[in-house]
Length: 365
Image (cartoon, rainbow, N blue to C red):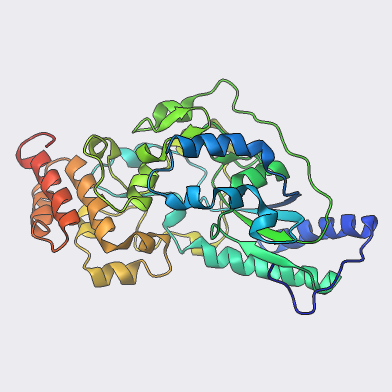
C-alpha cells in the first residue's frame, strides 16, 4: 500500500472514526466530488457474475480482464492491508438534455460525452491526493492508494456497495438523484472507517437501454457482450471491426452513449462545473471529413491530454472511415475517403475500401 511517510498503527476509537468518515465526505464535496461513500472490501457476491462473464468470453480481446480477475474481486490482495474503500463520483455532463438527435446527423462525428474534453484521470487523481492529504492532516500518516480507472478495480461494484447507486441493466452505475453521467474513482485505505449502506435497484421493468443498443450488445439485463459494444469496437479493439457490425455503428467514432441517453433516470442529470470537461476542438459538433483529414501531427496535438489519444491515429482513422461509410454520399465524403485510399496502414486502407464500396457501389461490401 502506498503510504504517507512514517505510517503507523491507527489508534482512533469508534467515535473518532465515525467523525472522520463524516469529515471525509465534507472534504470530498469541497474538492469537487458530488458524492463520497465508504465500503468494505468483501466483493464475494460479485464473483459469480464476473466469472460467468469471463467464461463466456464477453470481454473479447481485453485479456487483462481475465488476467487480473481475482485481483478485481479482492481489493485487499491488490493493495495489502486495505480495509475500506472510499468511493467518489464526479459529474461530467454539460447539459441536462439527453437528445438522440446528434446520432441522426450522419455527416458529423459522435464522440462519447466523457471524452470530449480533457482526460479526467489526472484531474480526479489530483483531487483524490488532496483528499488523502486532508485525511493525513487529521489522523497522521495512514496507508492509502488512489485509483482512477487505472488498475484492476471493480469500481462499479464497490460504488454500488458503498451506496453511490445501483448497477443498472445497461451495466452503468445509476444514481437516483443524478442519473449516470459521472466518473468513479477510489481511495483504498487501511483506516477501519464505518461503512455506508447500499441502495436498492430501481430499473424496474424498463428495458429501454437494452432495446436501443445499435448492435444488440446486451445478452440480457446486466450482461454486456463487449465484442458487440461500440465502445469496445472503437476504443479497445485494435484490429478490423467485424463487417456485420460496421453499418450498425452509424456516426459513433469514439465510444457510445445510447444506453445512457435513453435512460429515464438521466432526467435527473446534473451539469458539471468543471471547465476541463468542456469540449475541445469542437468534438461535440465536428464534421467527419474534417476529423478524417487530420494529419498524425494534428491528431497528436488535438488529442493531447485527451482520452482519445490512447486509441492511436490508425484506430482513429479506422473509426472515422466506418462512420464515413455510413454517411450520405457527398462529393466531400468521397474526396476525403479517396485521399486515404492508399494510406500506409493496411488497417486504414481496408476500412476506407469498405466505406468507398458503400458509396460507389451503393451498398455494403
